[in-house]
Image 1 (cartoon, rainbow, N blue to C red):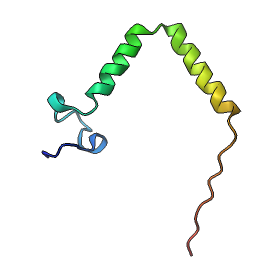
Image 2: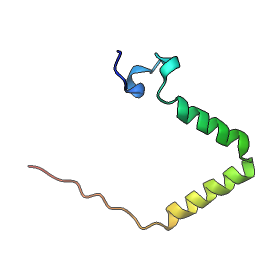
Image 3: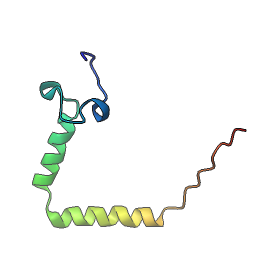
Length: 68
């Protein structure tokens, strides 16, 4: 599989097949940096703010498209 992009959720189920060219490496590095530089209290504040925002958001209705 030598294409420039692969679907990691399907191909890398039992481990990364291209660790030297992993597409998610940038995300892993940014997440690691966030975890190491952010206090647990600050993470809790961010999570609580996101929870409050979700609770106060209006409901989203999904109407299925019935095809008979």
